[in-house]
Length: 286
Ligand code: SAM
Image 1: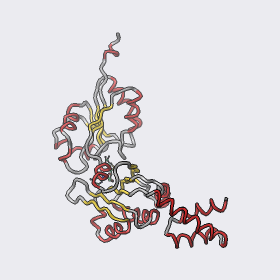
Image 2: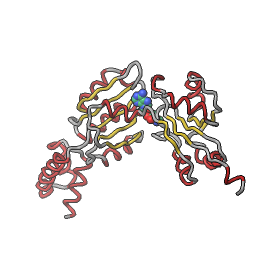
Image 3: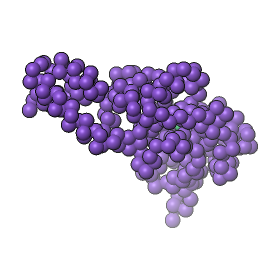
Image 4: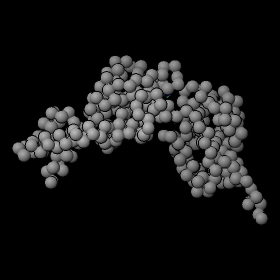
């Protein structure tokens, strides 16, 4: 047997760190980070105070979207030769809107054990306190920052019946809520979960129009970190409103061009313009 086959493979640990409150750092996370050979951190300067606080002296290397693809192969080779490595991000669970995916995928190809050291995740924490259904949900990550692209993504979610979870930058909060209002209607419930586990933690569950007023009237609500959660569509309502809007469009299209029919239908139903336009085109084709 060659010495290589006797070599015991190390592990890769995916370690969650707090999303604000240091009390959420688990003893197992501390032990793991103290015992591995190398910590991969999204931003070493950001993680330094956390590591110092918990007396973790392990060597730390930067690991982010700009270098993770090129260094993953070398890292896997080190683990195959017996070293153990931990991945951490700036906050929460690595790989959830954070770096780490290329390395974990490659590790599976090499059959390297990838072990979880769980902890706080902003999406799951927000969901659990949101007051929206938690039995089925869809994690949508960050919406595009450009309005047209954001609206396109939101339009694709019109029929989504599960609770939707978004990460959002506070400076885009008003724009995103305005888009949600125009696409899903002002009555659809939205939850703003801000500064979770921190001093100014706020969780507000309200129809989108009300939440928009709340955020506009208090600039503090546009600071810090936030998760937005959107109530899923009630499919019977969608079907009913869709049947009614189709009927209305059919009558209008008998008398008027598409553009004018859609514009009148939007005014009457308050429904999304793009959606009605799409329906009108389908009716015209048929
Ligand atoms: N991996 C992290 C996790 O497990 O939650 C998320 C990383 S992502 C780059 C950062 C985003 O998570 C923020 O922009 C914000 O949307 C959300 N977030 C992080 N900490 C938060 C907190 N304490 N309260 C609310 N949202 C938070």
